[in-house]
Image 1 (spheres, each protein chain N blue to C red):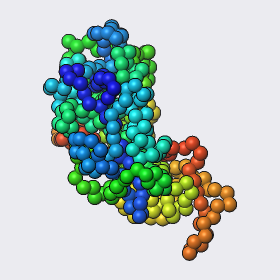
Image 2: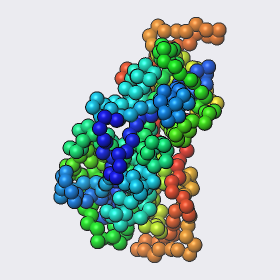
Image 3: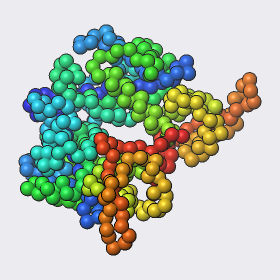
Image 4: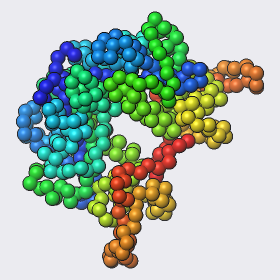
Length: 219
Length: 219
C-alpha cells in the first residue's frame, strides 16, 4: 500500500418512469465536478459502516431517502486515473425501485435520464452505467429481477411490459406466460381484480421474502 | 473516509488435478496468520498497478509464476472485522489454469485442495472460495468457461469430463454434444488425431482470441 486509496460506493438506481427504463442522477454537491449530474455515491465511513453494502444503503438513504430497495453489488471500478483526487476504488451497487419511492422522497433532487441515452457523466460513470444496464438486461432474461421496478400489486400485462422495457425488446405473450410458472415467484392476490377498459385483470404480487427467482440455466 | 482502508486483491485459482477440481493455496509469509494456508493475495501498489486487475495479474505472477490465465473479477469483500489489521477491502478475482502451468512453475510452493473440501482458512477466505466455486459452477452451466482448465489440445470426451468435474454432476453425452455447436467456441485441429485404446479421437482447441462463449439465455 504505497499511498492511501480513495474508497467510495456508487449506486446505479434504476426505475421505470413514463414506461421507460431510467437511471437516477443527482447534482454533485462538492468538487471534483461540483454541480454536475452523476451517480449517487459517497465515501465509506469506517467508523459506522459494517461493510460496503451497509455503506451503499446509507448513501442511498441519505441522498435519495430510499430504504431497502433491491440492491446488489455490481462490480468494483478501480485505478489511478478515474478520479482526479488519486488512486481510487469504487464499489458499485445497482438498485431497482418503483417510481413511487422517488415521488415519496421528492424533497431530494433527482434527475431521471433514460438508461439508453445518458449525457456525458464525470469520472467513469458512463462506463459504470453501461455496465449496470448490461447486467440488468442479462440477469432479467433469466430471473424475476424486473419485478422490483413495479408497484406492489400488478397485472401480468404490466409485468410483461416491464420485462419488455428492461430487455429493450417485445416479447411474445404466450411464450412469456409459459415461462412464468418456471420462475414461481408470483402469487395472485385473493379478491384483487383490476377493472379496466378491457376485461378484468387479476392482480399479482411477489411472494413474501422472495428477492430473486432464477430460471434453470443448466446445460 | 474516517481512517485509511486496507485494499488488497485476492485470487481464487482453479485447476484440474487427478481429474478433480482444485483450488491453489499458499502458506502466508507474513502476519497475520503467518504460515497458514490461504488464497494468494497482496496489497495494491498504487505506484505501479494501473488498476485492480493489473494488481491481481502482478500478484498472481509474483506468487505463482502464472502469466495471463483466464482471470475475471469475482466480487469485493469488505468490512471492519474480516481482517485483524482494520477495515478492509478485498477485490477478489478468480482464475482458471491447466495444471501444466503449475508444474512449469514448481519453484513456487503450491498446495492444491479439492474445491469442495477446503480446510479452515484465515480471514473470510472460506466464504470467498465458496462464492468463487458457486460462480464457476453457475457460469460453466451456460458458457465455455471450463475449457480454460484443459490443455491446449483436447478431445470432446475430455471436455465433457471437465464440465462434469466443474459442475459436479454427470452429463448425458448426446445432450452435451448437441449443446456444443451453440457455443461455437471450438475448432478441430487439422490432422490432429489422438490414438487411444478406443477409436481415434479428433483433437480440438479454443478458437483464437476467444476467452468466453455464452449460451443463449434469453426468455
